[in-house]
Image (cartoon, rainbow, N blue to C red; front, side):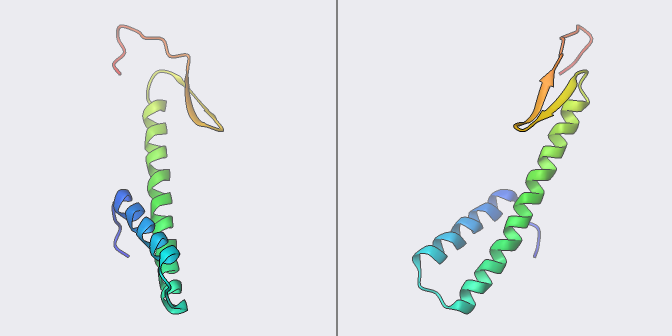
Length: 86
């Protein structure tokens, strides 16, 4: 499957879900849609993890400590210095 943008993959996932919930479709077609959805979910997860990693890297590159808790990255001890650029 060609890699697609997150938004397009998510939109297609919504279409598949709606189609499977609203239409009476054959078992074979349901299986094909499920397989497509599985690939789209993997694509979306990878893109989200990549974005999270990039954000963490950007935050770590600032002059501050990065604390990761159950809610994600948290900035700590960031003191604005006249020589720092955000």
